[in-house]
Length: 343
Ligand code: AMP
Ligand code: TRP
Image 1 (cartoon, rainbow, N blue to C red):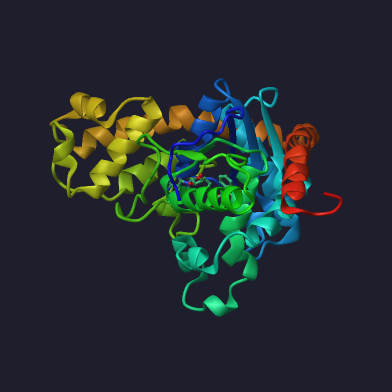
Image 2 (tube, rainbow, N blue to C red):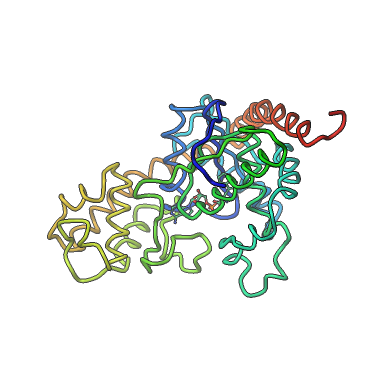
């Protein structure tokens, strides 16, 4: 069902989103924001703040509004140009939720039962999780397909949700005899920043839900905090190897080299060529310096933007209007295909 060959002939379009449910960290920056910026010169781009997804777990209402503006500010500070890309809140475009309902009737329970993110997030007591948390990936498919987006820049953890999106598109196209109506969307995942790991454990993903703040670099961390976290980051006593295969079985070393590579726009092999034979006593300060040089301007710009929420609100209002203009005709055509009145 997930054959990558498709005769879809519509325009190439990018959609992605980040939840306003916590502070952004280096994983979000490298896995998502850096790619958002790179794609805006290549295709039409739409970047939303997925507040409907955020409320699948409890969010304090005032905090939700503030975090939505913070994520929008992070998009802008990272370099997303609101003239090129539409930046908007998901809840400001009702077509997402409407298409999600149709897709809930296309997706199968068995498909959702396999979703690993639900299993992780619902924990031991899944009967206490919200129904929305379970159908979360269906809403994500609607976010993407309500724009017929062909490309979705995300971190590696979203791969399974993108596969589900393709399965929903294929089943819809097949069931309603509408060949190639929805595209089979491609994830944009590649690169060393696609899976940034915890600074305390190279086998666990860097995550906002990790109880230890030492495990992640937050976009709001200052130079001192970054230096301290990198200094304390778990490593091994060996010097850096000459080639990639020397990183096998050394997840922490691999992660730090990957972060260096992603931040400097190089491959891990190129980073190793520079640092081969050196210990972490040398490598860590270089990494901390690079992190500060890359993140400090983003943090400063975020602070500046958040001091004037009216400017962010103008960006969000304009983005929502542009997003609605793309989504509404696609939703209307979908409803016609399904057979909703007046046909
Ligand atoms: P979230 O904060 O879960 O809404 O994630 C926002 C974006 O950041 C998604 O594209 C994720 O795949 C990406 N992301 C989250 N954590 C990481 C990580 N540790 N490494 C790379 N990308 C990540
Ligand atoms: N599920 C994504 C995450 O946790 C957020 C998201 C919601 C998303 N809708 C999307 C990402 C559509 C890409 C496209 O990170």
